[in-house]
Length: 418
Image 1 (cartoon, rainbow, N blue to C red):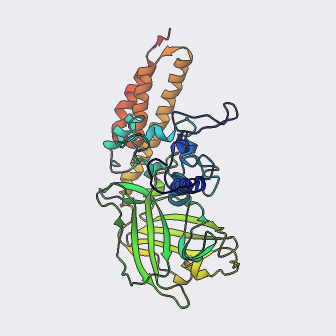
Image 2: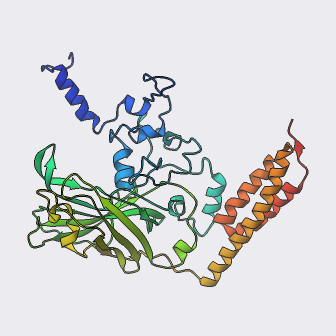
């Protein structure tokens, strides 16, 4: 009150705080950590990962809005994912919090780095990858297998805060998409992305399509993009419709790597999508599906269809909440989005080499475990085994020598740990 020259009631202050907290996180959003054991007035110096998703309190602050529901790459998974039940990131079980990898940036407390690096914990993997044929491949390209969140978004007439609004967002088309499509970022690095159709009715001007992808930050601050499909008119629709494909980089949930065949079995990439619509406006819940196809001719979201009956709610129109129905097969852009062709003979040889190396590494691992059980110090051998394992999967050409060294070190008698 000392800093303003206008009256402000207590209720007005509360209303203002609620409005600000919709977007701006406060101290409690990150550090409040109540529990039955320690009580309700408990705080954590290191913000727990659930707080990054709203702490289960449905605050929709931070990643509850961007990761699980829009981008679809949930870290916590399970009840925190959309739809619920998707796998949690492999790092969750190891008690690794979001801020352990996404460290504080130059802006100070609360200014977390969006980008994280794997090399702080997996330096041997980073080294092997940097020397391999996959050096221009993001780790998530292999280790993220499924996504959730929006699979469709339409802006059209509806109600917001119980009042009519021409741009109500119909986005509750939640479902899994996988495996993620891989594309090149601004620097030629392959990365996994989430792709889904978007449309907004009531656009005044006519906008032409722009072939290919447009990155939102050309210099690489982020790697999110879109494909501008232009404006379209349909009889009886909410014209004009501006249509585009949303293309966003994903980085969770990390898990067991996808198979080599899932990428190199075909030059054409296909992500299968199923979803369930359950907005409170437009229609009763119904289900649907689509496919995302990326090949040498372009990027195409196709075969969009409802797989159960659409029952309209009062005032509901498909041209509002399901513009994809009248718009038809427009969700495509030109460009080469195929996986580079591989030499079948070379590929089979490398694949067999990886399998053979894993068998040898498993045998060495059994030897190391036996020595560890006897209390012997095999830390150096274990370190070399980790390097050999990383090379076997990420750079098979350099793995042979490392595997032999690991086998020799594992066979030597180790000193007993005091």
